[in-house]
Image: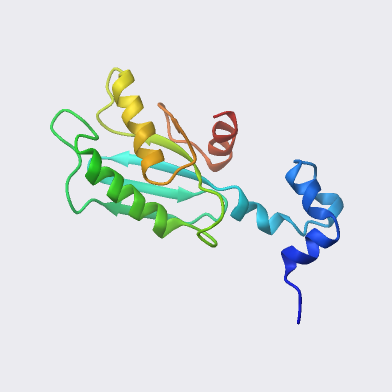
Length: 158
């Protein structure tokens, strides 16, 4: 029976170098394909009743409108349960690779209804939203839209 690729890499001793964060160039780049599965970064742009989710490593992007509105007149996320449900669906649609690999690091970016900045409660709601939808680590970004490389930098700093 033919052994799997990951099994062969572990047998050659490549896996400990990858886990320790050392360069995989010495390994011939064989582990670079696994990096997008084992470390997952997701950039979530939030608009009224809509999430635009981009998986950074694979480049897949999904725009999901909520079936039940989660935005109220005063708050971008006014109905927390509806927002978690919509974001969970978006993360599932954009997800890359088997489901049992690491949960993604999520960068949340509210694009509307944030005049004057976010309050501590709004910031906390966005963090809880990302973690409730399946994110491992979450951070909130306020400002201009980010490029993929900038999202990776901010996710590493989180």
